[in-house]
Amino acid sequence: MMSWRYFEEETIFTDVHKNGQSIVMVTHDLKTALRGTRVLYLRDGGVVGDYRMPIFGEDDVKERRVKLSQFLEEMGW
Image 1 (cartoon, rainbow, N blue to C red):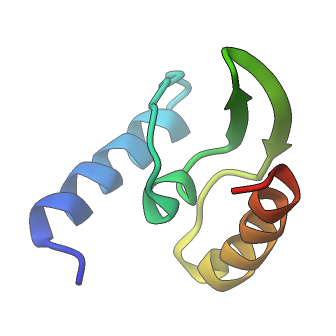
Image 2: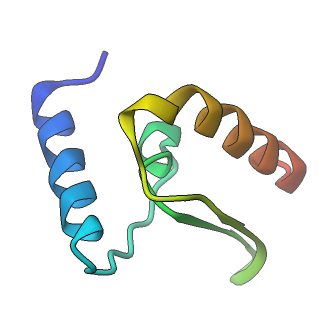
């Protein structure tokens, strides 16, 4: 279950990004990655995959999760 603090932090990051600021975040958490617009998959210190998504919107979470999960499976996650 997502805590209020987590939701608040993720909402702040989304709002900051919508205002034009780039954010670099390293995570192994799918829920966090869903809010990004770009996912770089790293293996042995190098980029082996690059997946881009439109700016996060609450109404497209389900579709984003499916597409990102497919990308991650292809990468061997």
